[in-house]
Each structure stands twice: as structure tokens, then as C-alpha cells.
Length: 460
Image 1: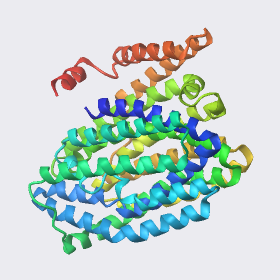
Image 2 (image 1 turned 90 degrees about the vertical axis):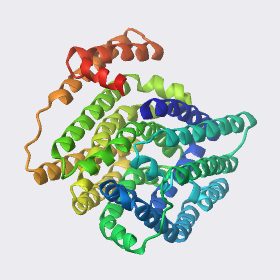
Image 3 (image 1 turned 45 degrees about the horizontal axis):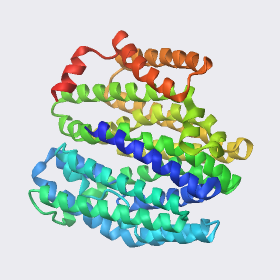
């Protein structure tokens, strides 16, 4: 259900982004993206990634859920003022125009409405995706409609910032109301739980900051070194990668509480869930990479128009990074469940250093393409290092490729078929239809998926 709804929201997001880019132009879109990247980076401190710890502990001891939730909300309240002040300072230092400054400050002041909020975990702990998906769809519909109106009326960045603020506020209020109704007990701020939350979650929080830093800092480096237009080109194609995060997020939103509850009391269920997660990630990410490697240019033309075609060369590289990102989501959850959050912090710190140094070397030489290659390299390093830690903790060898390996072969065959069709002059619509038909057939033909998987899906 999550994947289906998120696909609809992905389509709305693509439309909104395309209209947004056309409204602002490549230079204006680069400024908008830089402001959003700054707010995302600094705004993480509002919760500091503590939701992961709260979910883990509440899943293991459901009777303490209201205390963990209260502690999480109390932490967000404490952090709100310094986060808003720091974000505003960053916007003032980075702005390239009056519009960017005003729009950025509007988004900063209304930051409390930007995220899903601590109450989101009430639904996640109950494996209840209905309300979060309805809220997500509500936000997407309102934002797309607002961008369309602004595009048709010739609006500008400041009006867009006001519109984004309004849509986020509506979604947050609806979700908070529904969450409080769904909770059996009101959240109770607990200083004891807050202390435990900080103690266990601090390594996760610092690691999360580092992850967001190496995921976003490349856009800021391109913006600073190469200027607004190259930053706009890179941000346009990077936005496609951002939108694709719905796949691992959908899977882990449902499976993370199951993994936490299963370990260490039910290791068989833990391993079965982890293996299933890896197989689903492989099906989604390998297929996406095969399609992006062939259809990058027509996709960018469709999304953003001819003004952004130069960015198409970076899409296959970021598609490769998406493969590692999908498995990275799974590895991060496994590290937390296994209590290896301090090791995760070390990996994230090393990744940030590598990413920053690499970008500072490559961006002056190769522009945003250098940033794309560094994103790919950084995500690969993180996944390999975290997998090594997990296997060492579990005292396991590297699992055989199994269905993940057969999925990889199916994706290679799909890419070859699509490339042949492209050389024959097939348009994007034909390539899309061909991929939708060929990929499932290849997955079933190579036994990467089977009838039992379909029966389970339909049965659920």
C-alpha cells in the first residue's frame, strides 16, 4: 500500500518539481535547492535522529511507548529555537539574491511544520500506513496545485516559499490530530526516558547529521564553486534521486519495528525479514538503474525541459548510487538493532571526510559530474563498511547471491534490451512500456521472484 501511494506521490512530485524548475529557471532553481539543502541539514538537529531509538525501545516494550514518545517530543521542543537560529544564519551567509534570502527565512521560521514530527512513530509502531500515506498525499496534492497556480500566474520564489509553508502546516496538523486519537495513552514527557534517549541515541544522531551532510554538501559545494546554473542542473537530477528514496523508506517504515522486536529473541524471524528486505531493495534499485542508464536524456527532457538537458549525464551515475542507498537504509537499521550505532558513527564520519575532499578536488575539474561520481563512491564505501561490521557482529560469512544475484542478471538483460530499442529510435513511452513488461518477465524467468511471492502479496 505504501509503495502504491508513494508512486502516485512520486508522479505528483515530478510534476511539481518540473513546474518549479520552469518557474525559477536553472539559476533560480539552484538557489532554491541550496536553501532547501541548508534547511534539511541544520533541521535534522530538531530531532537528531532519535526516532530510531524510540522505535526500537517502544517496539520491545510496548507498555512504555507513551514515555518514549513524550521524551522524543520534549527533545524536539528543546532543540527548536537553536535550530531555527542556526538555519537562519546559514541562509543569510549563503544567499545569492534578495529572493533567496527572504524565501529561505520564511521556510526557516516555519520549520516546525516541515517534517513528519515525533507523532509519526505512533503509526509506524502499529504497522499502520493509512494515515501517514493520506497526509503525504494531501501535502503532495496541495503543493502541486500551488506550484501550478504560481507557474501559470508568473510567480516567484517568495510566493513558492509561502505556499510550501502552508501545505506543510496543513499536513502536520492533520497528522498530529490523527496520531493523538490513535494513541492509547497521551505522550508523557519523561526525563528518565529522555536521558536514556540521549545516551543511546547520541551516536545515531551524530551519524545521521554526517549522513545528511555528505548527502547534501555536494550541492552546496557545486553552488559555491560553480555557481547557480550548474547547481540548478545538478539539483534537478539529484531531485530524481531524492524522490526515489520512497522505495527504501516504504520498506523500512514497515519492517524496522519487526526487525527490532525480533532481535535477539527470534533470530530466525530477524534473518528472514532482513533477507526479504534485501531482495525487495534489489528488485527496485537494479531495475531503476537499468532504466535510468538508457532513458536519462528523454526523462530529463520530460521533467525539466531542454534547458536542463546537460544534467542527463549525471542520472545514470546517481542511479548507481541509488542501489547503494537502498541497501544502506537496511544496513543502518540493522546496525541500530544490533547495538552498533557507535560503529555507524565512525563510518559516517569517514564517509563525510571522503565526500568533502573528493568534491573539493573533482567539482573544480568536472563540475557537477564530479559531485555525482563522489555521491556514487561515498554510498558504495558506506554500504561495504557497514555490511562488514554487520557480518562480523553476527559471525556470518557473506551470504550467497541467491535471488539478489538473479535480480542483478535480470537488470543487465533489461538494460541491454532497452538500449537496443533506444538505438532503433524508440521514444520514452515505448521504453517505459517495454521495461514494465520485460522486467517482471525476466524476474520470474530467472527465479528472482516466484508464484509464492505473488500469492503472499495478494493474500496480504
